[in-house]
Length: 352
Image (cartoon, rainbow, N blue to C red; front, side, top):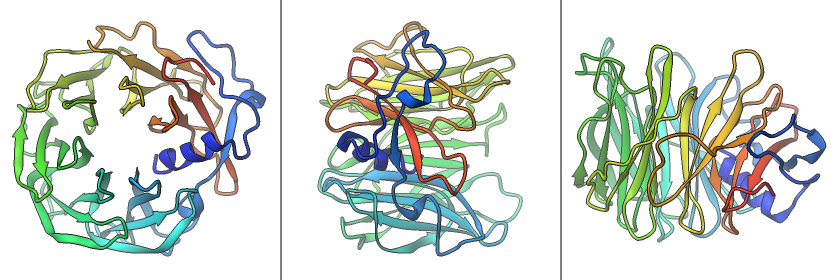
């Protein structure tokens, strides 16, 4: 996931492209020769100053100047997480040294129009606690801290930020603590100084609970869309809801049956929102589905684009391309692999 945004820039430039991405609804089996491939973006894929230790929870954000910042958690020993941050130039090459942000885990990152970015993380409390306090730190484009650390007032198993305006971000939270019926989610809006500006009722607090951290993407002109996985026995779904700029739920909802994994969202250059999720039949490698969302969220997955599976790979988070359309990159099959394939589509969902 971390390099999804980074490779998008390489794909648009055509570097090492060996054809075009393929795959629409009812697509035939994948022809490897017809799939775009791009070089991995920097050694964030392969090496680290903490080699040999567990690396988890990678995320990446594209900054206003075209460069990138990536975050991840390093675990030298169980329970000793450190949030690490690495800058990349517009070509995906590491810029400067990997630095430590704070002790913690489950980091997230989002960028703002002024070139700054926000890193969030959760800090483990004493042993046997179920959920962790959420903190954040804002940085300028050069990676220097802006202001003091933010205490965001939530306890969570995971929390991910998403900028929705020049001075506001939404925090999508999943937490077990205090929820008798299973995990519940929350959405809260904050200003740049960490002040709460909006809250929403608990997401899916029922006997099934939600099954992953909510994803959020901003809408042109204000408001945002949130998506999360929801699963009762034998009935996995994706739920999407649209909110206005004040955080008011507009009652739109979409349930997609037979999904697995956590959905991802992106807002395209024409204002359309695309939601992508993983499909798996238990036998073959995972494939992906992508659905373009209009002004009203649909009631089913009808018309979703089928993105063909690739053996030994997992589809990663969908990313919008500045020049138009979106890409779904695929995981590497091993550390020695120098390129990874990317499925690319236009704003209207046509394979490119």
